[in-house]
Length: 173
Image 1 (tube, rainbow, N blue to C red):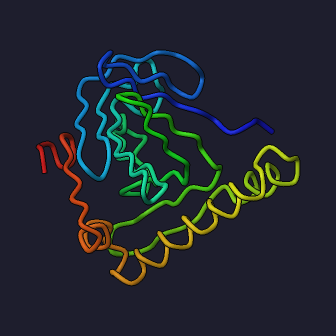
Image 2 (image 1 turned 135 degrees about the horizontal axis):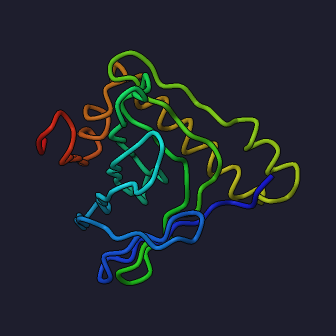
């Protein structure tokens, strides 16, 4: 079992230090009142060639859309990491709290990695207040998605959040 993974999003340096501590060049950052957008290549990754993510600190979520390599497409539209996001000037720090939500647009939202979450709490890697916050974030997201027919844009739109993507459907949306 691993301690919580941490990623750094360094806007002025156009770098993303991934959860393994490797600095990755970022193609684009966009700062909005509700969060931070990042777009970058996935170098030497066997299944994915590009990643776009939105960090949403007030929701404790990182929403990701992957661009899959041929033959590796997964049955998901968005991947939500339940996390804590702290902004330190122009650097954003994401601490993963183990729980993830796989969203299939207008079909479902499935919470995954519950086993990792329970193990982390049991081993003291995730303190009770952080664990409670993670559960509340996950429940809020699943409830919000379900109330909006599993439409991520509809749920976030009600909260005043409009996500835009470069690669989705081959053009900016």
